[in-house]
Length: 435
Ligand code: SF4
Image (cartoon, rainbow, N blue to C red; front, side, top):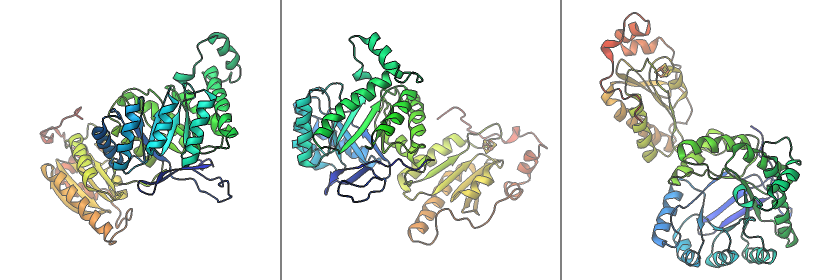
């Protein structure tokens, strides 16, 4: 993992909703040093902004799910009118997503929004852009300049233009698109610099993961503004997840990116959940809640692990706030090793579960009792952490086979040794394939 790339720092929010920093590492214009802020997760509401109560409910849900910043669409005046009533009711910085009508940006600023997003592909009248810049400058609001591949492709002379621009990045898969995005960005940002405005975040999204990586890498070499990473039109969650993670993790591990949005054709709460999980997985944010480890299962499985893991995940997500590591493992092959490294763990066999807390065995229960007992141990452990009686990540003893074989009884010991077939001890409700 590379160190985060230093950028200027942008701040959004206010005293009521709190302040969120994006980027950092370069000194402010007055010389005050900054350090890179933790990468933040953004998302966008899916409902109509003018439907005030529904919009407020959706923003509450996304903020409660962990979104650091929430963006809303403001296509019509009734949307920016609604913002005046929405913003005082929410506890997270709000960004107005503006396309085509620069007046919506001015109205959103008046309504008290915390940041504006402009698209150079559809708001490109110089005087209009300057009006928005000046309105934001007066309120100390940042602006995201978001060039989307889909909205900047020039239609006239397209073939000629593609040939000319493609030559600039001839070694890249979509060299002409990359060149258009960079050229558009440079041209647009010149307007901001002429107005002495530098509270800028840049994004350059595409649905092509390789182009996203190339575009942001190139932009990070050319500009020192913080970067908002994202793959646009990523598709349904099932495939969009892979597309987004491929592009974003490729950039983040190289120190590029200061705030992220994962885009799905689905409830945006999944964008928040998966964005946070990506940052946790890369060690870019301190985890809140459980780090759940589970094996994929195989022909050695002796309990209904898929159901157990989903039940554990749902219950712990609702009840545990400390970042404890919990392992749910199907058998003794990898169970003891994971149990040794986890704060709370269960590994199964012979339709029983052996439960460990920081490497110390606390229970050996039959399959129907595993879930309740594991949850009890997790909640007890959380209580001890909160009272300062134990520390996360410490272990008391080493677990080494063959001890677990003994715990599971002689029947399992024989199975593990390949001495008997396990047909007599198949789990009653094994639901392979059910998620
Ligand atoms: S822990 Fe056991 S059941 Fe789970 S995948 Fe590994 S060998 Fe298979």
